[in-house]
Length: 333
Image (cartoon, rainbow, N blue to C red; front, side, top):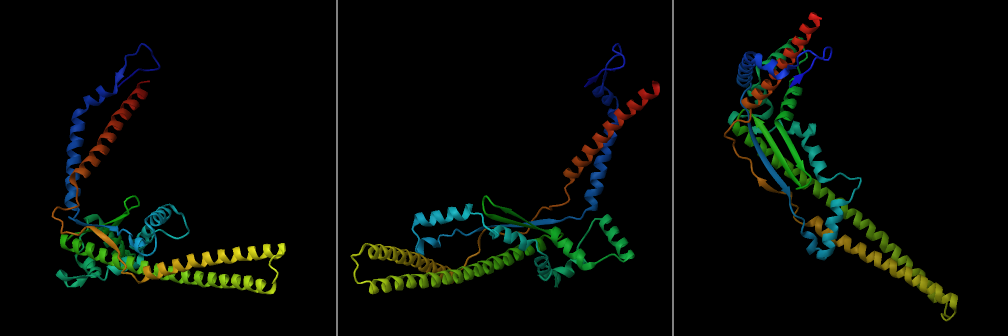
């Protein structure tokens, strides 16, 4: 890149690239320093291992055997995919569950057989940190600002991460720990607890759906019998059905009775379906990937740290070279 001096058109142009090339030894030194910094950081950060599981919702094919045709079941599925309502989607419920304080506290009670203790005291005794994190912890302890429970819950939140795919309707859970076997154990435990939560959530939903269907059925049943009573009472009290006004009223009452009967029949079918769905064997999800004991460490990542330090070092060095030239030109003027 060549730049011309705007104050004097006869002045020769100067090249920023050439100027930086003159300082190539400085860039080499900076690169070596970046390598040393990356090594120091990588050595300072304890090794951690990541175990992951991936699950997906079971296909809901039960509609085909509880009174819906294939077309109706397809329409129901499409409407449920695109319907926007006030209730949370299942993924939002699971996300809130996995990120909740209650769930994090429940994970702290998981028993770790190899250490004969629960996860809470395992983290207190055996969790390894970078030296600067331990230094901050010691300073906080001296100042009286250290809260053991708060720190343990913070570690659990950092160790347990989840990701939801709305497109594929999958849930990915990753657990990291200094011990590869502990990471795999925790990932499997999180999966089991999520499975229990999903089953409980669906059971509550089916129970509420059954109650609502029963209320609607009973209400429409009363409306149907009321409409039928009106029709019969009016018919019995008007023997001369040939009169135009009587015939019109009878037709209107009959249509009202038929509509009420159709609504009651639909509600009764919905109630039967809700009852069958409530008493069916409730499933949670299909396991796409089980937790396995990781072999290679997840952290530290030397290449990532080196590239980060190298980028910052080169940018800062280039900025310093150009800034230094600017200062020299101002002094000359």
